[in-house]
Image (tube, rainbow, N blue to C red; front, side, top):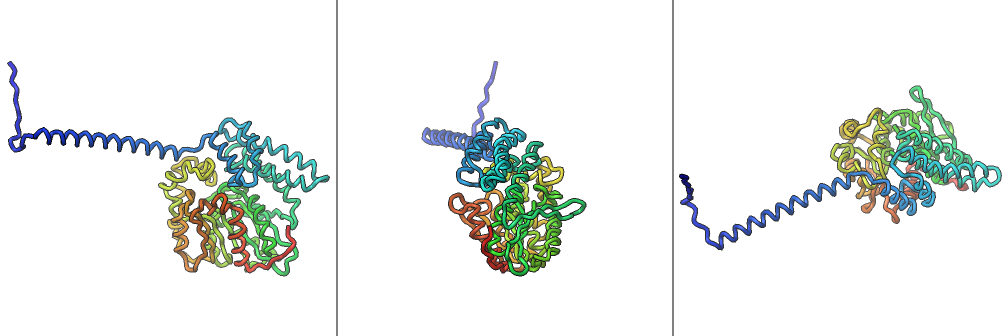
Length: 435
């Protein structure tokens, strides 16, 4: 025989049908809200994951061709049809396959240019430039990523130097002894200048190279200044990897410049792009006495080096075409994992090193508020620090380096913002008839 027990709460009034209905509706609404919130969070996580992944090969091809068509970095100067042709032989994201695809197209232009040197030097020069750009994109973003990328980089240098032979004033390849190795630089000085010449030390970013800077900085010669372009620590032909003390390499370049009798050692400036801007900011502090001014584009100073920014902005960044984190790994010594990147970055922060806030030389700071690669807060932190007023050019619609497609492309910023400031800072006197 079974018995049943009934538990009654005497303190609770019996619910009326209307109250019971309201309670059921409230429970149903709560369940719906819970399901909606859960679904939203799942979709948000999926979207976030989508943002953080690298582009697929098809996405890279589409974006690269688009950037070539509009002259956007890193395809400035590349012909979109040449890019399409190279992509026809690239079917995976294998790095050697990538390099081989672009070398295959570039080789044809290099051979044609070589054959035309004596009969049609102008056409040969065009071919060399075309080959250089293709070889350089074949090694992009880092030549150390695979054997064929290293070959493509070597060929890029060869093609650029073939092009450089046509330059007037000439380009001088300088070799500066440094810690048992050498710093390779490209120097050009304006011809016909009276007196000693002011000069700019130009340092590249993560994936550009001194060849790119040497091509751009030819535009400073008519303004009465020369330049020397070198690969920043960990990139290109640099003799050392990036580290908190790697700016000593750039100080050695200043030592060398002071030995050249045709240069005015009291009028030396520096320009740095992105990672080069990081080195430029350090040099504005450490070499305050020797640098008359430093211009920097999107200099990372602090937040850039923090773990959250690495994971949530740099990893899978879409403003960067592809493989930004692997390219960053390549500039350091024996860094192969994301955790190691985070560890190295902690050492590089100018705040952690107690450098930000120290006296600087005069500076021009260029940036875009929509930059997803270097946070605008790093730029404001730099502007707020130090002992002297800084000049700033901040594009509220600009991305990395302040660039804005169709409005403020890289060449316009260089021509209208950077060059005039450097010429003014160096008190350079225009010298006509430079090519």
